[in-house]
Length: 240
Image (cartoon, rainbow, N blue to C red; front, top):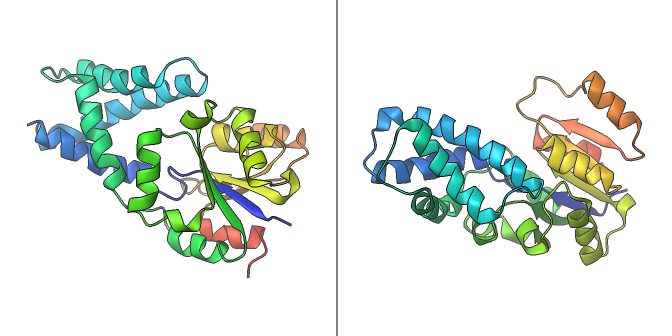
């Protein structure tokens, strides 16, 4: 049924949360801050970063402001002075793409799928780091095309980025499947573009949909799946 599999990158194949933790800790310690206070700092950062990325996806903030504010706001709340958010962000983005931790089973799954399907990436990450992540993690050979929202000027869940990907891969909607960890950006975005979707949700206890999710899915003509492990993709695309 499917010929083209479109993957999100961060927290779908490349372990963003773990890699971010390690990259940021390196910068944090290099700046002379206390190791025992890092967990609290990282928690504050994630809260601000998540909110600002949501604004970015809605075109409510520019990339430069997101990069600066997420650390400026973190420093302010944590009571840290003497370093600018822009400077810390620059050093963080230097270390970030050098991290190579993958989501569980990612390499094995991609290797097997790449023998039967065309694999592509659709990601919202920053242009200067996304390609480097793929290269340093030895993921690049698995993927035919890489679509980054900053290049296309349209972040997920906007319909435009999905349609752009379909056009540039000569993929038909009915032959395409989007796999990602974000319900809003990946699942809803692909759904509104008429593409079947897989919600990768390893943090959940089961793959059942909530009542509200079921109501939304009932209105769509596309198919929606939820998996807790990437290896569950094999059953969806009929590889046994």
